[in-house]
Image 1 (cartoon, rainbow, N blue to C red):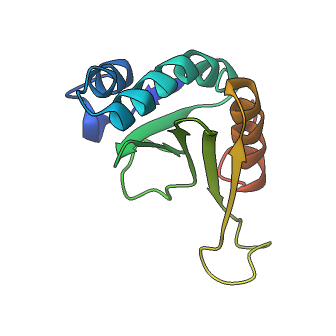
Image 2 (cartoon, rainbow, N blue to C red; image 1 turned 90 degrees about the vertical axis):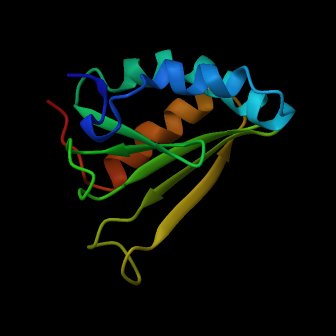
Length: 130
C-alpha cells in the first residue's frame, strides 16, 4: 500500500512536478515546490496502511481513494510559503451539513500537515485502514 501517482497524470512523478516548481524563477512557486518536496516522503509514510492516488491541480496535491480521476477528490494539501500547509478535506455524506462540505485548516509544519492529512483521510471516510 502506498501513495501512487494517478495514472491520468503519469507524465511526471510527484517529485518531478514539484521539483520543476521549486526550480521556477517565481519565488512563490519555488517555495511551494520546495515545501511540497519536503512533505512528500512523510505523506508516503502515512499512506503505508492504505492506498492513495495523487493528482496535482494548481500546485495543490489531491489524494483520491482510487486510481480514477472521476473518484471523489477527498483530501488536498498545499504548501503556503511563510505560513505552513493548507489541508482540506471533503466531509463524509453522513456528517456533511450540505453536499460536498469542506473542512480546511492550516498546519504549521510538515509533521502537523501529516497529522492533519491522516485525520482528513479518516474523517472523509474514503479510505479504510488495512
